[in-house]
Length: 228
Image (cartoon, rainbow, N blue to C red; front, side, top):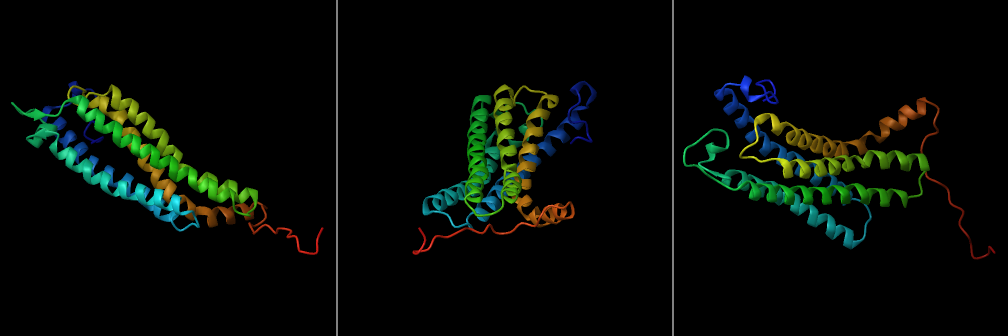
């Protein structure tokens, strides 16, 4: 879509080119829905491997199930927005489409659920990691790696803002760019959050070459029945 002119003023785009761009954006939405949800499911599944309380485990399972159902709901929503469906990318006389307010409301719900999930997935590991008896530097490193989900939550906040000011029935293609940009930032943040924990061994080796001592368990002094 960018190669065809996404982001340019419509004055410089032919009607056929605009139709092609909108078709690409429509298809991109389906891939984007699954990219975000599968990344969150991956993070949630990884957190389930920790020794956590039953309450946290139930919360994680609920969030995972929501992320599994959310893209399916969004796909149905996208397919039902306009009748006939080709009115999404070209002008069709007498086409019937949902009102902008309905579309925006669904966008708010999607972004709010995503933001809540991202904050839980980013905050829960921090609590677990700092309760471990590991070196402070190691805990800081893992916390930074796991906190990439916060980037996705920030992107969700911007998505909510641009959803509020964006009218899908009137906005030109140029004004779609910020919204689609923040959706991509969200996906990058989620994929990074799902993958970066596996970078810990590599970063540990790099720090070792720089003279940083290797990470190890912290020895604790235990009291005996004879102490005191």
